[in-house]
Image (tube, rainbow, N blue to C red):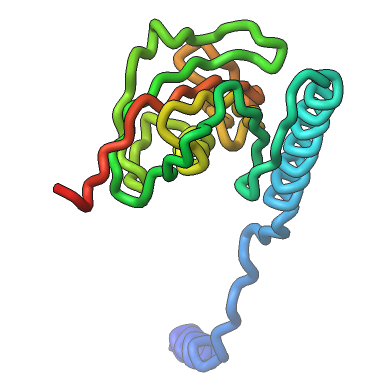
Length: 182
């Protein structure tokens, strides 16, 4: 009987104690994210350096810098004063994809003519070309130099373009259809 009484007292005293919170099993320091950010910054700097070296060597053309993080040069510039496409306009264009050393990765013939609507989501079209089309006028041909984050980035393209490869693309804007008139 004494044993039962001691056991009951033991249970009573231990059950009245304050609950102590457990320490987390693992603590995240953010070091993985910090390393990833630094790796991306280094990659962008390396790609931009390669692009700027290419521009420096190509003295036959004048390159312009876009505020969107890429460079471009006119092959055929508009002399008639046409306007650039506006939000919602449909544009018909063609383009190719090449390395910075001008090795064709995807030809214009493989891609064919493309239609897209300005500032509408088109996940098939890389962000660099979507932004570059807004700088162009009907009839112009422009060569763009894109760092990988404006091109195919980490994923690449179906075995044709490896991940994190800067590219150049020559785009010809064939036609602009003003959607506000329809």
